[in-house]
Length: 347
Image (spheres, helix red, strand yellow):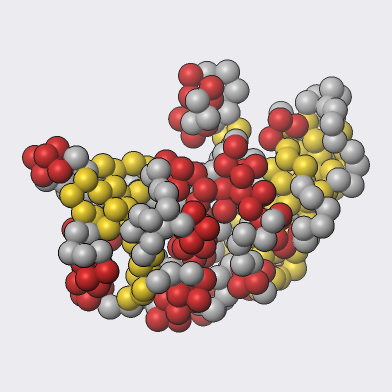
């Protein structure tokens, strides 16, 4: 897909788990129906952390990770219209064939030819990236780059709410108050869900979630079920969103939903983790579980609209930033900075 130019660019290459190297690599050119984007901001995602630690996509190393990005149009490939140089854009990271059964249904992750920028192919921890023009979304000029870089993670949350059919007045438990958990809380507040109950082992992050719009919070796992029953008139929650990726939390979610409730499976767990369900109980109570992980297509457009109109409080997500040359330090210190909900790399 990518043609190589004679010029080079600086990029952060993850050569092996835990080790970035800043290298001069060939700068891509925009091929036919492609756009060359000059990257300005990239967020560090939980998936990037899994890749960094060697727990995910290790077979693709060495690689340039990074997929939560924004930038400006640097070059238009042959056949591309509707975009102009220096125009700010965000990019849908999920590349499907565009014509198969799953692509037609906007289920790109199931496309047999699916690729993801920064996960199965080189991504955005670099000065430039060449991407299919159909995945480029023009961004409002009044929205700062650090906010635009939140479009992809917010799109994931938008898709989860859409898949779970969450609406106003529904009680929702969010397991995990990290960056994605906080975005879940904020979107749920916008939708009108109530009450919103958040749980996390970090009291600091629970407090952040309460300030972001959660109604109740718990940092003690043993007290969570009683809290949920108390705040839902003894029924249990309409929806539980697992946003951590621990099998024990998924199992706990089965005890937190009401009869006829729904589990939104969002957090990525280990490849061999399983969820035990009582089949008869699931059938008779009409409970449900549905997976959702990546925002794509309309989810990206909806997320960008929410950000452009100030529906999400972004301050806690944009305070921590590191230059590309300092990306190793940014990753090495993540666990010691729980107050930074998101760390971004400036290019």
